[in-house]
Length: 82
Image (cartoon, rainbow, N blue to C red; front, top):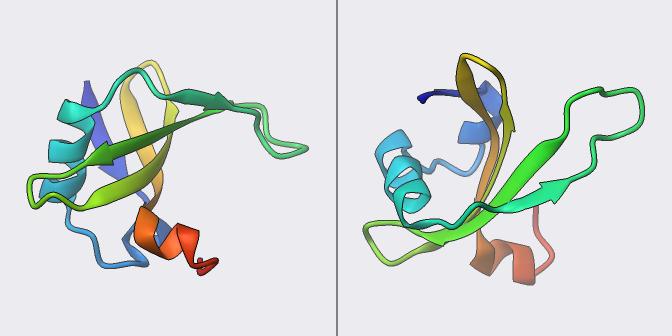
């Protein structure tokens, strides 16, 4: 499946190659309900990239591609930063 990235997914400066490597190592992820007013459910993965950095990745699956909307090191999540 083709993977696309939103501009906001690049907020924490995680490169596409690192995200793709983490997704290769990931399980099926967790279904996350869509925010009110949004019809598409989201999927969340916690996976380790090729550098050993654990990432939180959120995406929306369409028929044609996976749209990555959020990527962040879990070390920042645990500190309460976003």
